Length: 448
Image (spheres, rainbow, N blue to C red):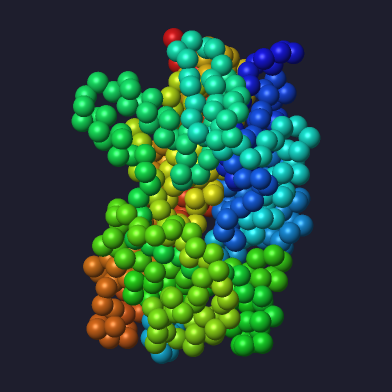
C-alpha cells in the first residue's frame, strides 16, 4: 500500500454486485480497488434484470441514469407506471385479474447492457483482472494483508476482501471455515458446515429471448409485446417482459415442486440450448396467449434455482460477502440484483467513511452485517411467499376453480393485495435510512 492510500480492496466477482461496489468505491480516491473475475471476459448469465425505484436512486447517485436512459425509455421518477399484468392462465380461457401500477415503475434491462454501462464507468479508475477464480484466502490476525489464492496458482494481497463471486462462492466457503474455527460448540460447527453448499429451491426456470417481431407475426395483439405480464397457474407460471428497447421479449417459464425445496438437484444446475419439449407439457391446457409464447421459444436455457442458507454473519475480520454469495434467493420478488446493489453501495459508503482505517475496517464491516443481513433475509422470505402465491400453493388459493367465478375473482383480488404489500418496500422505502443507521453504528463503535 503506497502513495497515501488508506487501504487496498479486492473484489472477487465481476457481476452486478461486484461492479457496483467497485464503482461506488471509486468515488474515494484514497481506496485502491482490484476486481478479480473468474471468467475470461466479463459476462452475465440470464437475460433480464429489474431495478425498482429504491435501487434506481442508487443508480442516479452513481451517475448511471443517463446511460440507462439510452438503452430504455425509463418512466420519470415517481410517475405512476404499469409494472405487471397478472392473468389466471391455467385454463382454456384465461383472464386478467390485476395490474400492478407503481410510482416510477420497474426498469427492465438486459443484463449484458447493464454490465457494459458499469464497465464503462469503472474502466478508468478500477484495475480489472480476468481468468482469476478465487480458491481461498488466508487472513492473519494482525492488520497485515490478506492473501488470495487463485485457481491458476497465482496469488494477490489486499487489506479488505469483498466476496461477490456468486452462489458457488469460494469466499463464502472460506468465511464459513473462519466462523467455524472460532465457534466453541460442536453443534455450531456442524451447523456452519452445512451452510457451505447451496440448496435447490424446488424451482426450475426455463429462460429464452423471443424476438418481438416473431411474436408479433404469431399474434399482433399479444400482451407481451408491450406489457410485462405474469401468467399464473397451479405449480407453474410464466413471466414475460420487453427488453433491449422493445426488440426482444425476456421469457421465463417457472415450474415449482415446493415439496422438493431444500433437496439436492439431480443434474447440472444450468443447461443451455435445451428443448422446449422438456417443459411445455406443464402448460398443457393453458390459455392461447401462453401457447403462442411457447411456440416462439427456441433453445431455452434450463436453470435449477438454488438458494444460500442464512449465515449468522456475512463478515469475518476484514472479509465480507455480498449479493448471491451472501444471500442467493429465489427470483419471485425480482429483487436479487437489487439486494446485491444495496449491499455494494452501503458497504462502499462505510469503507469510504473518514473514520475507516486499517484498524477500524472490522467495525465498518460489522455495521454492514448488522444492517444488510436481516434486510436481505426479509426480502428472501417475501420472495418465497410470492412464489407460493404465483403457483397457487398457499392453502387459501389452492383450488380456486371450485369456488365459483365470483368467489374465485374475489380471492384473486385478495391475493393481489398481498402482492402490493410484499412489494411496497421497493418503491416506498429508501436506502438512505439504512445507510444512516449503519454509519451511526460504525461511528459509535469507533468512539468506544
